[in-house]
Length: 205
Image (cartoon, rainbow, N blue to C red):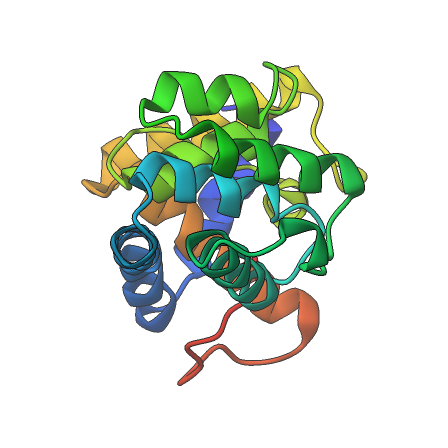
């Protein structure tokens, strides 16, 4: 086993039932939110998943949800998208606007608008928001830390190594890769922020 594999296996074994339950539920619950918002705003699910993913970098997940809902509802009402205040980087604002204006419905087309192959985390997040069983793995700054890697962002090689390690853990445990990733993510955030996730529904991404 590589050091990354050993570290993530150790983190997985440290997770308690509360983290595993939360990890199994996180993406299915969020995918249902995507489905509901799309229906309410007369949008395609892939569009909403794309919008949420491009608005997520360096933003608390609860804020991303609020801003995604606000942007979609303003669009549905025929309002001015430029009046909606968004937290993430400005290029991401433009991507979210284009996703709304394009009317794209196929995930392949949405991913092209979300970002290039370099945007590994954002593209993976988009796919798993659309389908928690897609088999992709989201590697954000907390997963980089969970794997014992330096810094807050994985390069392509590191990303693929973490991704493969999570898939191996998923196969060995009979869980979805998204559930294993979310479980470890919840655990390392709890440890890293010195707080407990117990009883909390609003968990930042």
